[in-house]
Length: 272
Image (cartoon, rainbow, N blue to C red):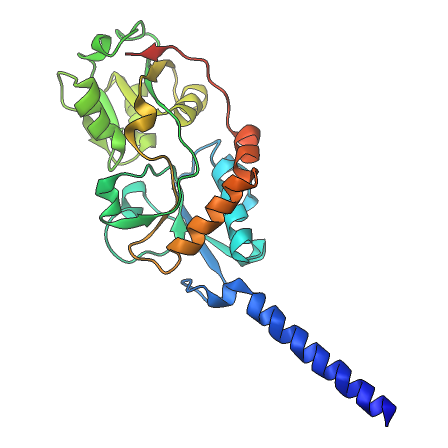
């Protein structure tokens, strides 16, 4: 009789623990595209040092590592993360998304907020100007020195409005499908310059451009947006949880650790 009572108690305890475990499994409460999976979008290609070797599934690179850290905060194991690719402008356009959240250096702007949700921002950096090292603007030391340059920018990038409104070049900004196309146009000497976040600018100069150089960072450009954030569908049921995950990673120092590991420090002149 005692053995039967003991067995019953064990079964009750096990059942209770199982119920608690299910209750604490936050993934059960999250409305993701695929039940039990977290679908994350990034660019095609994904740039270094944000994603190393264009392989986000490796978790190597600042944004790839951050994505997995957010996933863990939400209760998803690495094997439950699914990656998809999108064009930059596609992900911030109105309409249904093929991801739960997307990260490819999206700056938060009010215009974009009308079409998508953003998480808490995870990073802020200034914009830098890239020119050909053998071009007419390699010696630029101020914004005024860049007025006559022909600038390029990727479709949907804040670089278009920033260049037009702040640098105010005498010629219209040329718009291309992607930042990779912009870099190629500089290589082909079809444009004189383009602007990008300083981390991406540094990568371009070192790996994508045949003869590019950063002439400086733009004074006050850190305030052009609220920072870089994760993109979600408009009114996504995940926005609050994803923002809370980013908040937790900022608070416990994880984001700072990832910045120190993957992103460089830059000592560049300031263009005013």
